[in-house]
Image 1 (cartoon, rainbow, N blue to C red):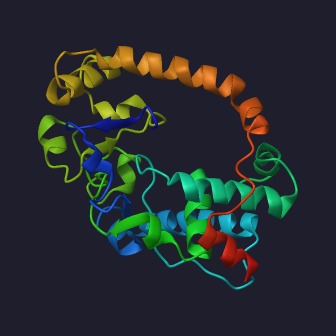
Image 2: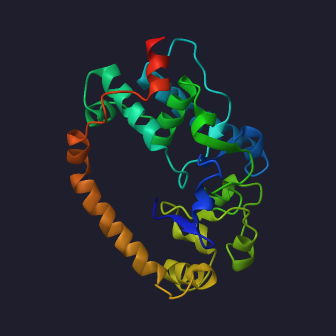
Image 3: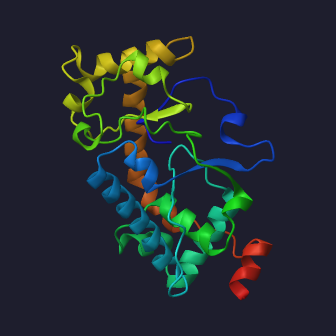
Length: 251
């Protein structure tokens, strides 16, 4: 999970999984973006995310003319199904006759979630692995600090306790790439004080300072990045597709 995803409440297995074991997922649409962002930016956001899905289809060797539905899967903190992810990796390496890291290093415009949902669309397995919803399921989009204020219908949103209390889902994103001024709006104490307040509002006891947790997360991420590519090269998923996926590719 990205370090800029913040949990607003206690989490259980039911947070992530439906009673039948499928992972919970939310689909976003341009119509929903138009209720949150300015019209031009809503169209741009939808176009960019759908383009990533089409890039995923191209990488996976989808049949010419195959299109994903005009809806966009929510990303982190949605969980990926292990069986489907292994089949995706096998398909991608077989399609290019190359290791995963080599395939992805040479191409731009992909994301892990776009590849995953492009693959599930290709094999018509989205509903097999995920319970699909169209409201906030895991990530509260409206309450998240996702883009610069100028892109929102309300450009002067203030990220107070009251703002986050209105979240309809257990997680929000506070994008780490945003300039601090976009988050703080003149608030004193800087980002450290902001994250400390978030933890005071929402973290269960015993308290662990959020800024310390973020530093640890960044340090771990640095270590992961140093050996990650080598680990990916050495990783080889199972040679066989799961039965349904194997049958689909034989067809």
